[in-house]
Image (cartoon, rainbow over all chains, first blue to last red; front, side, top):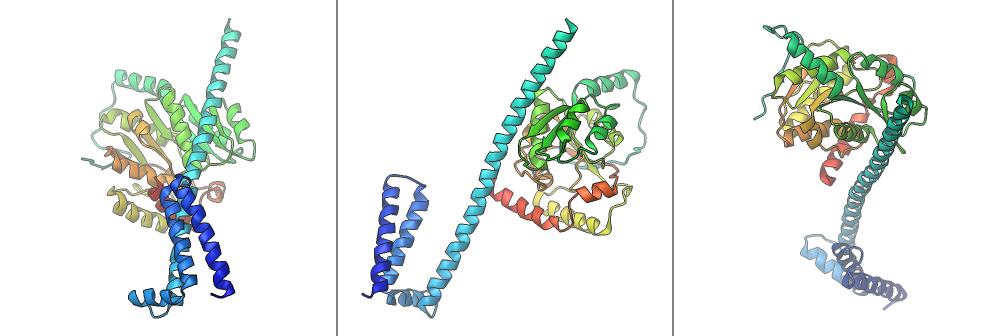
Length: 123
Length: 254
């Protein structure tokens, strides 16, 4: 094992351990943590035994292991970006609900105050 | 079954309303109809917009969508019910806020009306009379293309035609104008329609809701008054792609 493999495998094992702990404690979303656990384990295995990427690639009809890693990384990033867009949209909707609630509450208070002022003027 | 009816402004064989029906209509107009306007940086026009509506409508609510000018103060000065979004959320969000307010005030009909002077209060009145007398309609949608009375810029017309085709494919609705802000909704329809697309895609979402909820709808010819001011304030043609993206993303996250 060379220096890069030592550092890489250690880092992936550490991240996999953190993801596993979150997974068993049900923190941060089960599917999300399971996904990251898979990523770190796969990364660690690929760094420990680079030839495995060639074998998996050939199973999938891709010539080189490096190409497989490239495709997988690109697809994963695109999926993550899409998921982030959806999550942002959901947060925007929640923010609108809060802003609307404040507007309606202030509107009711304003309406009540106006009614009281009018009652005061007429009495 | 939805039977869209594309009415002309001068329907044939229309009997003159009796005085009792007319009085009934006036009572409805004065007490049960709410006009909802979303306004963003409209301090120049908002007061006049309210004043133009006053002869026809008593209940007007303006939602200031986080304006950076004194739109809110001008709206209050006009005497309209005024709500304020503390930050800008978009026209769709502001309309939904106004609709919620109108419903809470007991509105029997809700009219959405632009605050930039593009819509005619007379058109709103005519649409209201149409939905009030029909007894079957839930939604009346303004259309600038029914009688070719509006001078629509060519490129804008092209994009609107594309939107019509898109709407037909996604909702099945047969419409001549899919992005007209002048609408009349019954209380039931307004309560059931849920606008979650905050910005300009809300217009498409409202049509989605009409289709999803199987509401009875009709189009009504209206005039859109294009001025240099309203053209400057309105959406650019390139915004169509941003609206499409918002719409598609909104459908996924709804």
